[in-house]
Length: 223
Ligand code: ADE
Image (cartoon, rainbow, N blue to C red; front, side, top):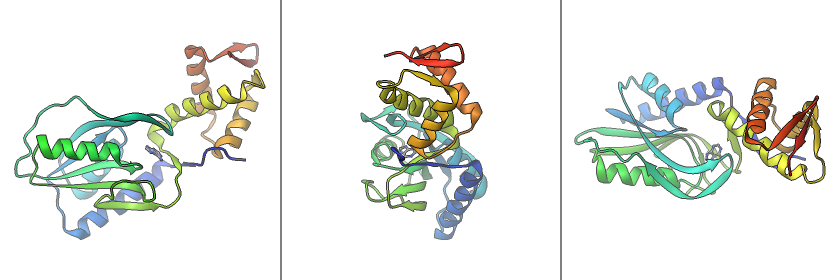
């Protein structure tokens, strides 16, 4: 039984979705002078939109809400609050997904108040409509049931967090794990398979972190 609804997103899908999003923006007639990527999730989609929309100017703003995969932090904050002048420019703020929408709302408010563009629109690849507090001006996919999207740029980070959560829980009743058992349990919990390289790298990081220790060909969960 899957415990966390998760969908693995491929690089091919990201390119396809970004291309589709660019077409929607283009057909609306909006021609941004500058694209602003929300760090870190908006970087790849923003860069692809620069390509598909032929936009040269790319900036970023770091607005963070989510500290760990699928886990909500207290509130969103803007890191590195630098000043720039976007007076007269039409801007497009880009992120991967609108989930609660809080980090995007904060980024938008900050930009409007401090960078003062002539116009600012929001584009995201995905929009989780039932939970989002804002609707982006442009989106490619409307998500009706909440899912954790495992994007290719957070593969290792998410795998670590997923295994950490799973072993912390399962480790209460089973302390010793073979690699194959960890992978099988991962598939059972999350319903996805991230591939051997990622499992191995994530486990190395969890050993460094002290959550597990290697013992021969087994791993012991430290409780
Ligand atoms: N970041 C915030 N919400 C997310 C989700 N549901 N999937 C992937 N990344 C996210």
